[in-house]
Image 1 (cartoon, rainbow over the protein chains, first blue to last red):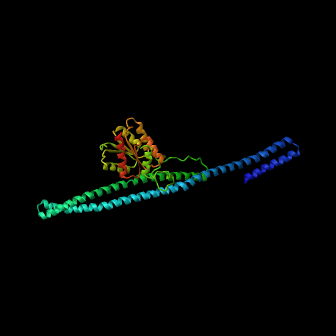
Image 2 (image 1 turned 135 degrees about the horizontal axis):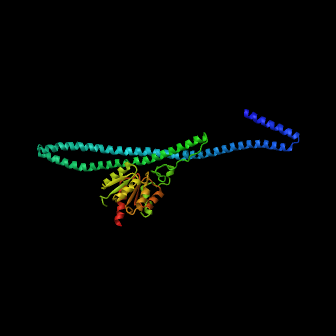
Image 3 (image 1 turned 135 degrees about the vertical axis):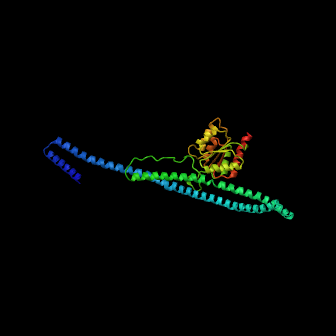
Length: 248
Length: 129
């Protein structure tokens, strides 16, 4: 308020001096007073222009952030959702494959133990010469059956162990996907910090760090429904076809 | 195909290295070594006497693609057959790997049968030469 009063007092003094000088016909003094009054007016105009420019600049900055946020919400976050759903699916599939293989293998292992225990007891009786010849004939048939059975069953166990082995590939594939989502979250954090900076005090913007992943060119496992994965090949057969077209 | 050949398996995920190592053992190959990216793999290849390289693409430090380029550029290593086993499945990536000099390309997730088939094919072709 006091500044405004001072301003007005100054203007009043100048106006009075102007009137006085015009009445006295003091031309040169009149001119210089007129100039100083218009200069005061111009400086206020420049001040207002400066304010407007700054507002425009801030609006433009905000607009940039808006388009970043738009890309995040329209593409990257839905992609991240697909990626995380893929992680759930991969881990679930892997757990089911492993459990399925164990459910097949465990009863076989149990049966193997039971049959071996029975045969072992009989075999010991034979070794101790406590077995009559008719019973030994029976035993030797049983051993025949057991050997045939065990060849088939042990192959089944091997097969299921191999399924369990392959089911562990989820750790690599989901690990790659989760790394990417972590990078996205870090990028979003950076954008949010920028947003807070812009809407608060105006500060110098630091450029966002790009290519945080292990390899920006590589983009990890193929995820169904992931927008950025539309141009990907969908099976090993397609890979083979492409390679053979290249002379492989 | 020589079952005693020395094989280097390169992948940044130790679980995947173990899977491949076990599959190779299942196929009768017992001499496998491991490295977790191109940077550690290259000196191992240069120091050892390796007959076959199986590598992932996406790894920190040095990628599989750069490793392949480095191997092909090294006169001592240039002839090693290379199988790429990776989740990368873009058309241009497969073309790029082919141009860099891979002998085979398997996309993750893969089956034991696919891995065997590709390895057989690589050595059949080499032996036919």
